[in-house]
Amino acid sequence: MALNTVRTLAAIAIASTAFFTFIQPAVAQANRQPVTSLPSETPDDFVPTRDGFEYVRREEMIPMRDGVKLHTVILVPTGAVRAPILLTRTPYDATELTTHTESSHLAPILQGYDNPTDVIVLGGYIRVVQDVRGKYGSEGDYVMNRPLRGPQNPTEVDHATDTYDTIDWLLKNVANHNGRVGQWGISYPGFYTSAGMIDSHPALRAVSPQAPIADWFWDDMHHHGAFILHMSFNFFATFGKPRPGPTTERNERFDHETPDAYQFFLELGPLRNANEKYFENEIAFWNDIVEHPNYDEFWRSRNLLPHLRNIG
Image: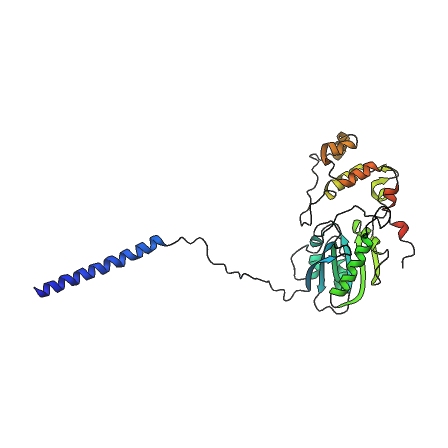
């Protein structure tokens, strides 16, 4: 009898153990929270290596004398010693002009508009490209062909002072240069290059404005006295749009909704229709062009040519 009791108790114990062995995992499974993602294999502070790159890239906000800061890309060749600096000031996006492709080599990232790549690479230049005030990553207000300081510009700054302040900052904050700066620019950047020669920094030793804007009334807006409608409309419809602040975004190109440019401008009618139909008075310089159809003080104040005498 006692033996049967022991056997019975043992059977109950085994059954209970089996029951809880199967029940407990089922309960745990029911209470487990679903896994929605795996842990990241990227560290919180990941810094990609640039070992083997031909250059060191810096992006700085350089302060001007009025407190406005200008976005500037600085490319220093690896191992540079007493290198000259080549500066371009642009309204066309300094970041884009220095990132034409992803590469550890200097030439491919510069190969494109407004970069004399062979000169930069073979000459061992420190390459500097800056967004002018009011464009892309820079602070401040953009003024088309900002006049030099004077009656039409009573502020303390212009493109000559911005160039001076930029060069002064570079010499004090970029290592391994030889104290000599050159400036280069094509078309509109050529305007800023020409302005940089006026009351220039002593370290600015060479300037190369390529096909620069100098007197915009004659250079582009009017040919033999006739207003160049298609050029002015198409350029300022995109370039002249206002921006709320520093940005990396490009303005969308104007959509004429037809491949026939002649027909588009024929149907536009008188100049006032540009605002009524398309610009809605948002393009400030377009309004200036319409309000100043003749060569008056507005245009003369933007003419750099009289200021380029006795420079050397």
